[in-house]
Image 1 (cartoon, rainbow, N blue to C red):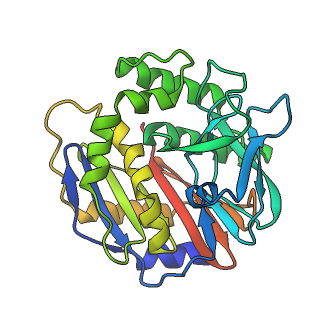
Image 2 (tube, rainbow, N blue to C red; image 1 turned 135 degrees about the vertical axis):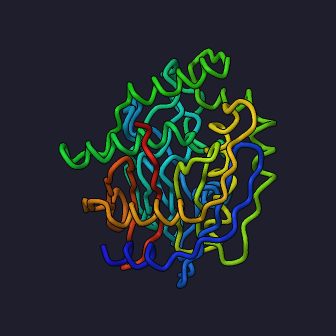
Image 3 (cartoon, rainbow, N blue to C red; image 1 turned 60 degrees about the vertical axis):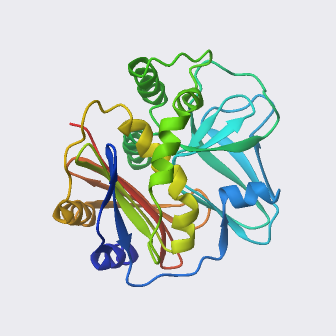
Length: 307
């Protein structure tokens, strides 16, 4: 789509900053748009939305968001919701309409619980770790293309979390991703404290141990600033697994090459789970998803897939 191609072609890659095994490259768009929506955390804090199971019995791949604001709410692919019958993460980025109930597609990140902890959901402050998010995005895109659903490979999500927990020697009674974050809270928060957004920054490229893992792009620097801690946590949980000294990573050209690969990928266009258009992008060794509304690119995430 033109909105995506335009933004990608005009991105400016800034100077990198590195902390331990994680490197961030700031991305800046030549043109930005002030937002007219709230983020998930802002909406929950203001108590203007309610996220719950779709029914008393619940449905693993779906939740119900009741937006009582006179303003839309933006939820980002991978954001974690905790509570109700089991913790979930967003399968896609959703713009939930004002004064409207929206069914949102999710994946379970707590395999060992199916019982109410409380009636509604809140935010953990985390996002699904990047390794899991990449594989989940690829499976959701395949589901959208071939079955016109937004479901992930749920067993694959559980398997990736179980593998992470085993490698990081983290026991969880309910196999919850959130418990891995709790176990590694201090090293993860050390990463969060190490990175600050630059003025006008609308996105970032993330490299773990010297290898580009993904990019995140928003239309408004204020939204990127709000979500940066969650995004850093997502990559930090992968970075803390790296043993020894990280590989030196300084080449902006690798970031530009990855962005060009995204721009040159195959675009698959669908209606959004809420407002807007959901665009899935597939390329050699990468997967991406974007939400476009009224000609504006609200959010794009792209990941390198492990071969």
